[in-house]
Structure formats: C-alpha cells, structure tokens
Image (cartoon, rainbow, N blue to C red; front, side, top):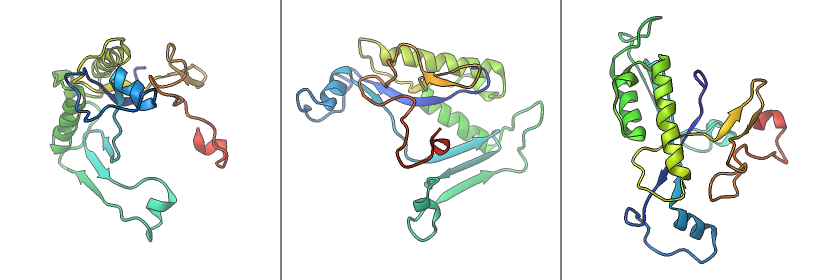
Length: 194
C-alpha cells in the first residue's frame, strides 16, 4: 500500500446539496442512487504527470478508433520543462509541479505541505489516509456533502498478485450491480482484460 495505489473519484450529497432536477422512476437503479445520494465521478479526459517534470493531457483512448488516424480526431498537449528535472533527492518545482498540486487540491480539497514531496512515504500515507476518510463517507449510511473526492479503488491485492474486491463490498460498487474487478470478455482473450 505504500508503493502501488489505485484510486477513483466519488461524491456524496445531502438532499439540500443536490443538483438533481427531477424525481427518478420508482424502484429503478436511478431511484436507488437518488436515495443513497452516492455517485462515482467519471472523467473522460486522459492525463499523466510523471515526476512533476512532464504532463500529458489528451483525449485519445488506447483503441483502434482513437489510434487509427483516419477515424476520430484526437488532441493532446504535453508540458516539459528541461530546467526543472527530478534528481535522486529532489522533486522539481516548475509549472508541472504547480499543476499537479492544483489537481490534487481540486480532488482532495486540501493543500498540505507534504503534497510538495510526492516521492516520500509520508505523502503516500497522507494521500491514502484522505482517500480512506472519503471512502468511509462514501459508504456511510447517512449521506453528507463530500467536498473531497479521492477514494481508494475498492480492491485488495494479495502477496501473490491476486486481485479481489475489497472486503465489505460484496464484490460490487455501492448501490450498483457493477463488479469491482470487472468481468470476463466473451470476445477478447483474458490476457487483454486483466
């Protein structure tokens, strides 16, 4: 848990914090989510920040449609500052670093000094603690207005690499029938879906 972590984004709202505009159909999946006021946050953009030195933000998916070159139009932007490179003992403090801090502040609603050094165990443990606090709020019986959205992706990884759904989840995301570990594809070889 100190070196490889998987996260998701989620939110919860009270009835007074809701932005919903109409009542769902009775006994529908939407009604269950309306009652629990629990929602995963889906972000369609793709972004990668590496060592606070390089950032890539784009729209392409890793599939035939995006990579073909003759189908969908995709765009990406990369940011690299050669004057701000990481060393074995330091993290660069250029614009990419500032961008990552802004992203973290947005999804965790916190700005803490420990975030300035993401390569430290203290930072990893603090981010994990925030994610766990958010998970507890996300799965609680009573809804609250969440202003921090980072949650741990609800999996457990065994010492032998086996992946299973987090204990207490019944194998599915809350209020849904969606399996946490996905499901086998009928058309793709298993090596491509695991």
